[in-house]
Image 1 (cartoon, rainbow, N blue to C red):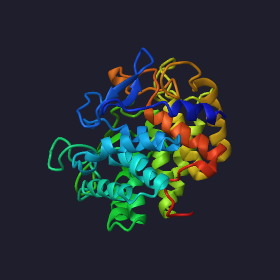
Image 2: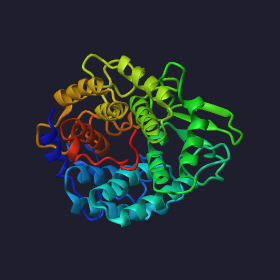
Image 3: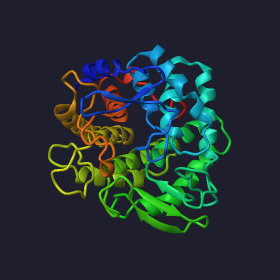
Image 4: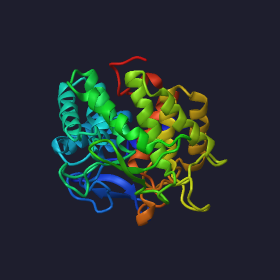
Amino acid sequence: MSLARAEALAARIAPRGGLLPHVTGPDGRWELLSPLHAEDAALTGLPWTGGFVAGQLWLAGEPDRAAAVTEILRPRAAEPTTHDLGFLFWPSAVLGLRATGDDCYRVLGLRAAASLAARALPSGVIQVIGELDDPERRGRTIVDTWPNLLLLWWAEGEGMPGAGEAAHAHLAATLPALLRDDGSTFHAARIADDGAVLECGTINGHAAGSTWARGQAWAMHGLASAHRATGMYREEAERTARWFLDHLPEGTVPPWDFDAPAGGPLDASAGAIAASALLELGWEDDARRLLDGLVAACLNEGESDGVLLHCCYRHPIGHGLDCATVWGDFFLLDALKRIEAPDRRLDAWGWVDR
């Protein structure tokens, strides 16, 4: 393992004039985005990744810069049109609360959780993007919402009425649509107000019926978090984890999509997310093997930006096909700290011990 190297690289990340790192470009340097301005490549219209910048700075022991990034994100907490509030605010506000004890982060996290819960439709689906009365977007969901629910599980523990119910209802509505019997997942679905599944497919994956690697990892993390919070969903979490492990290539770095033609890009970020989920499930031996492979093949040993190389952002539009990503860096650092320095890891939960 290489926690010291990962921490040192993570500690270098910084905002510049309100702009935050996102993914690295062909020159190996961070592409910088404002989390308040539209990003054409983002499925949900606005950048969804800034919380992972704050999160890795909290994990790397850089509280001043982590606080500065969290402050940049603050206006997004009241945003009414995206599911990305979990990604934005549990690594920033919730970990900020764990790191500092400052109640301002609790207030911020609860504000974001309330905005997220307000996106629930009659079916229980937390709509991924757009106004809830938009007929083109109503009922659309992606598997990425499952890890966003961590913000609602946390808010339930903080006493927010309805937060846990909203998270349960979303899983009840979307598990039958997105989780296949064999443990693999669809990336996207559309669900009617009465709960009927209207369509299943993909947005970021290779084909409608393929298994997009990062989507499978998001499923693992979201379901493992749901189990941690509730004691439920263990069977579903283990089914997604077993499928992921059974389909890893020999080198343990996932392809960008498990059904894509051989020779395509890798997505090390999917491996880092999956490793964090495996640790949440208590599958430490599997997590260690996965992390060993990621560190050996993908840890940045050069002068480019980022911690974890050979990630893939959005293959279908040709953006970030071999890059570092702020979320891959966050989850790698989280998993390494959990194994090598658990006493220094910031646990997003705090309130639950299962």
